[in-house]
Length: 270
Image 1 (cartoon, rainbow, N blue to C red):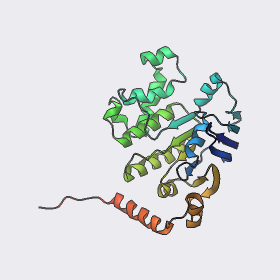
Image 2: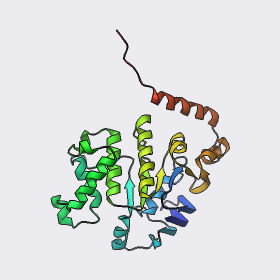
Image 3: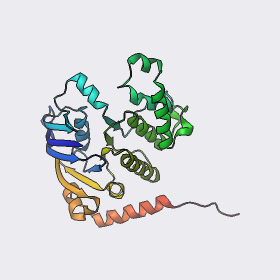
Image 4: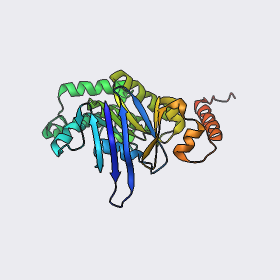
């Protein structure tokens, strides 16, 4: 379980990115973070694993407090938190298998990773994970030969190699087309259910969040202004999160886009 208490982040410029955020995410639950640009979504995710240092507040994973850990303890704690990035963060010249095995870097001695001599069990687990994400036929391909959706699947597999308790997912579909976006979101939900993983997903697409994330947390100006079920995102709530907009028209456009994404174009008979 992830527990956040009174989380504050003030940057050196004086800007307040987070203003006393309280949040609990039980094991097995996947939540979506939504909100306008600058609301604090990415900052919140990066404070959890301390890629960004919080100014105040406490963060717990299970019974262990993340805030306040020294460098060595933090490195061990990060093993328990898998990170999935918007831009995939793969090593382009390495193969799919090598990128996935890099998820074990926190567990193996440096010489093993340098020589790419991972323990046999790690390799077996990597094959099983690649099979689960649908990339077993691509293990020897270089990362730069993959499509965007395939790259994101490699990123998911790499995070799973850490055997995490928590996934931190930063805009996983921002670079993907609508159909692939739905496939990736569906895969994330299925894997978290299978492994009883908690996950925090920073996502800019409200319609996609409503489709795949049962619990939504809305941020505005560094504060939580909504925390509830996806079907509770009424036009009034969305206005509270994002400001004035014709949300009825926006929803109709989202429905039209979703329908377009499912159309199969058949060849014309000649």
